[in-house]
Image 1 (cartoon, rainbow, N blue to C red):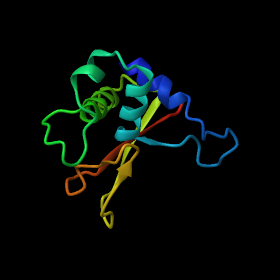
Image 2: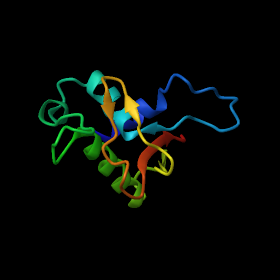
Image 3: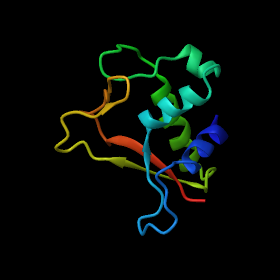
Length: 118
């Protein structure tokens, strides 16, 4: 799963080599959406909901992706990816394709984001 996520991050279409801020970040939700579209038969896609506000599911594909990448980064096993988070301060809603809204807006440390750094 990690290599598939790294591939998704490395192929972000908005990347411009000359941009002074480097590659764009993707949120855990954006990664989950891309992963489920690219790998629709993957066992995590078929067994876990995407997640989001109102799903009332204890586990989601978005959570699994965020945990997997965060753990690999914490253990220094993923030198080609940078992680971070978006503060939820002043954000009332974050909505993604398919009318999926972030379910963790009132939690800390914020919403996980990741980018490929090579």
